[in-house]
Image 1: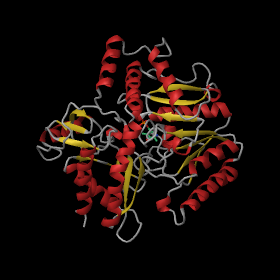
Image 2: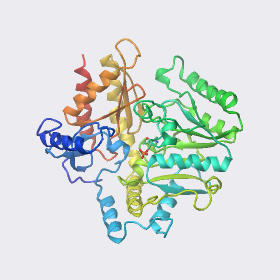
Image 3: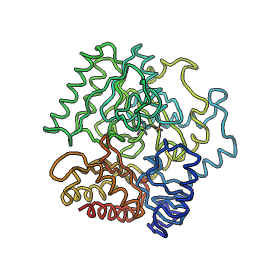
Image 4: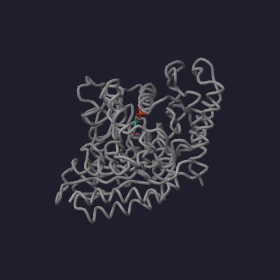
Amino acid sequence: MTTHRIEQRRALRTAVPGPRSVELHARRRAAVPDGFGVTLPVFVTDADGGILVDVDGNHLVDLAAGIAVTSVGASHPAVAKAVADQAAAFTHTCFMVTEYEGFVAVAERLNALTPGDHEKRTALFSTGAEAVENAVKIARRYTKREAVVVIDHAYHGRTLLTMSMTAKNAPYKDGFGPFAPEVYRVPAAYPFRYRGKPEECVEDALAKLEEVIATQIGPDRVAAIVVEPILGEGGFIVPPPGYLPGVAEIARKYGAVFVADEVQTGLGRTGDLFACNDEGVVPDLITTAKALGGGMPLSAVTGRAEIMAAAGPGSIGGTYAGNPVACAAALAALDVIVGDDLPGKARGIEARALPRLRQLVETSGVVGEARGRGAMLAIEFVQRGSNAPNADAAKRVAAYCHANGVLVLTCGTFGNVIRLLPPLVIDLDLLDDALDVLAEGVAQLS
Ligand SMILES: *Cc1c(COP(=O)(O)O)cnc(C)c1O
């Protein structure tokens, strides 16, 4: 049981954003390009558990966790101490120049915790995009093939290759081409937007995957199939049972490396350490980031030793890859995630929140579906009386939540999804309070 430094209660002293945030935001606009969007322009001074404190003294409920990063909270004392101790000893050597134990220890932990009991190796980097990009490099080197298969609604990052692998044009790709070649896209299993039964949705998606491999790529040309077990930025789309094992099976059949991008879903978020565990799927390579560093930038590719060995000495890495301060933070965060059973806490969040979100489907007329797993939950907004996406409703409800001190994020290819990603350590009473605000926000639409 974590006790919190900051009282876990929503409290507003000013409008949100308040006058000091407004002033700082004006200063920001004169110094920072608007290309960095912002969900809620408040400036944070303190954060703990499920609460963010801003410069105007407002206490906001955090249902974003810095996009699924601060699962253990944004200032967990064990993480803060590990960071301070490591920074006092040394901040950097570059692991490719001289080594340090923290890097090895994080690799050992991930080799042990990730799905499958085969021999594994882990390479550390700094960002999720870097992990995904390196997974593709390693898969290409191992298979001596070039083609990468990705899924509709996928999000894999903002570098050239991962942007190319990402589905949504604006704002991620528009004007940023030409894109990396040899990236092929197949339909997702998206039950809410599929006209038919869930089993058929899976059958169709898998059949299309095989068809694209056979007809557009060539069965002996696929290096990797890269899948988010639950699609994140694309709308928190949960594929029906059978889909993920089916993709893994197809990858095996064609000799392609099966890469699970668990950058957002991994490390407890979905109520299990990894979303792949839900159906016992063992990926060849798995990418992690976001929650891994307990707030510090750290990412990883973990996978079969023989595949990871394909990248020869000096062929992967990076100046900051597996930074020692980030590794120290990760070891502390992993201790909390495993030791305090944060996957169990995620299941508790689902049990508390999902029924309330489902009520909104019954009562509102504009929430088409409530879905998700663990503490990765979402509602998809539709036009009254149809399934047509309703981005305006999502935007208005998010604005209502923000004005009332609850930080939610939107997502989805159509911009019509509100997603909930609270820190896994959030108080359930605080969560209830935030869900009240969300329900009010939905109610005031009509
Ligand atoms: C966030 C995310 C990424 C990119 O991570 P960055 O650290 O922002 O580069 C990649 N894949 C998935 C599934 C993500 O959610």
